[in-house]
Length: 264
View 1: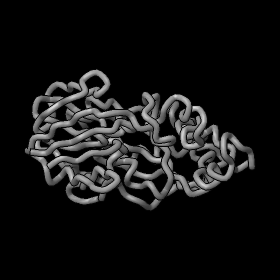
View 2: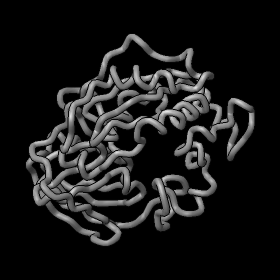
View 3: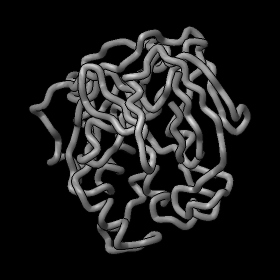
């Protein structure tokens, strides 16, 4: 069966295991249902997620022009501490920034390849943890805006990492940790402005991914360099498809690529 459309990050549903869906304009694929089947992926063209034009993707699914213009790619996305909507100060589009920044945010600990601290909108829990391939996670604080979450993350990064080793995550090279103990260790380092929002009563969330076999040595598929690939799907973790020959394909990292996917 042939599917065609522009890649966007997979949608997920919490479950045992997590369910993964690739949504196109007029159709969708539930990848859980095609495990152990052969997939052929062919790059057709680019399609910027903002302007829709066939322009080479620069970052985050946007062409270079849109990346530097759209409010959905402002610096505060990657660096929440740069958020200014709470000051009524515009970066690119104040209405958009208020809508995104002035809502409850969570600072959390997640364990995918190692323990890390991160920030997400409350509405994105547990989606954010799933996207990172975390097998366990826990909230630290729930704050009313993105700025407070950002300065908390910056403060905690001095004591715990903020990056995921994606290769270790995909190889399932993991160690279970007591995240409740880690949360208590980090409590003293939360900035005063956010300390009243510390969460004390929640437990760890555990996540199970639909993987039949993890790769022994990871080979990353780049459609810019290899525009056609075929392989047997063995798992989905984070935003990656895992194939039988140890190839992995980052769907989110390929947003804005218009592709055909043939399932046999």
